[in-house]
Image (cartoon, rainbow over all chains, first blue to last red):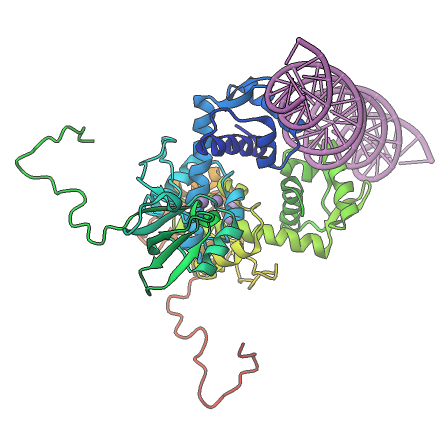
Length: 244
Length: 244
DNA sequence: ATCAATTTTTAGTTAAGGCTAAAAATCAAA
DNA sequence: TTTGATTTTTAGCCTTAACTAAAAATTGAT
Ligand SMILES: [Mn+2]
Ligand SMILES: [Mn+2]
Ligand SMILES: [Mn+2]
Ligand SMILES: [Mn+2]
């Protein structure tokens, strides 16, 4: 069983992979786990010995399949607990991260799976991040775009945040933005890439800086999803999927 | 903030106090925390330095007020989580202790209090143990007797277990005993103090060994508690309690 | 009061996981 | 390609919380 500290390192490496880094540098990882590069270097050798990362001195690390599996399970626990805290204990989305940082290390598989069921098998956590399934893989990859790269004139809905820090979440609160907020992109200002957006709810217009728009995931707002998954018809007894 | 290990020592000392030991010996404590007496001796010096226990070499320890406050809070968190696991995640009462041993160390006060409210401010955990309130003191002391010391001929209800080990709880399951089971004590056998009890539900009679009856808390079964707390009347506008 | 058994403490190690300071490797600019 | 800046590793040390073995204190029985 990995210790709490080891779990935090593996999780941080997976976070960096998710941000596009194929190889993770010692110093960048050190910053994420709030340790010195020296301590991180020592830890990486141990993680390599355990078979959880591929580590070549001076060349950075990446997770092995086994390391990824462990880290995905920590994502899973963290995000399920965040759902519980918001949906059932009445916390705000900017209050739950630190608590989930502790709960994520309670390792009982039975607990995790029952919590998942209790929550109704959620696909996304309160910040719009995907929740891995019991097999340690993401259940689905949603189609989403950064607001900063979205097209003009189409109504968009905020479906997630790139940056989950409490300070950013509270800033969104001040701007009147939450998950589910609908906006339409009106103008892109040349000066610094600021975006003028219209809020569907009240028609208000605000100018959002790139530091905000590049941290928001949006999706096209489909106001009336008539039929998302068509009902299976009697004429088609076998759809090609295994029946279990 | 106490470490996980320190919390486990303080909790174990409180357990022994609750079992009637005014002073706790190094060796007995060592047995409870599954460490050697040597390790325990070293820890006790540290706990004394921190002001959480009174420790005199070769004389044993007891908790200070501050130490008791910390330990009671661990009882509180442990027992609230056990309620959550049984009442909301569908665990059996013999499956929750180990998981709660981990959850109890998640220290957020806000989390604990919100969990308490979510559960409806329960007074007892799934094993019938009292749950301390947010002030770190028991909310009420229930009147209860060991089944081994209960009077004959009166219908009794099982309200708690002295021994929460999974093995004992499963043994109770085999005997058909759970919290709320109603029995009447029929005969006390001279040989070893075994008790013949009649189960109210089906009239069955079983002989229970002292190793079982001395580990069960029972209370008199009051079949119809007409009015436990009388409704306040209009004639008494101020009952003496602050109205909050 | 003595002495043997038991309990408890001390002494000396170990393993994890941190740290600082110094050395070594890599990278980038001239 | 040399060299200076940056990154990374190594060396040495610290703290917590374990352990075993040995010494010391307490206890209980003669
Ligand atoms: Mn989080
Ligand atoms: Mn999240
Ligand atoms: Mn328990
Ligand atoms: Mn309990």
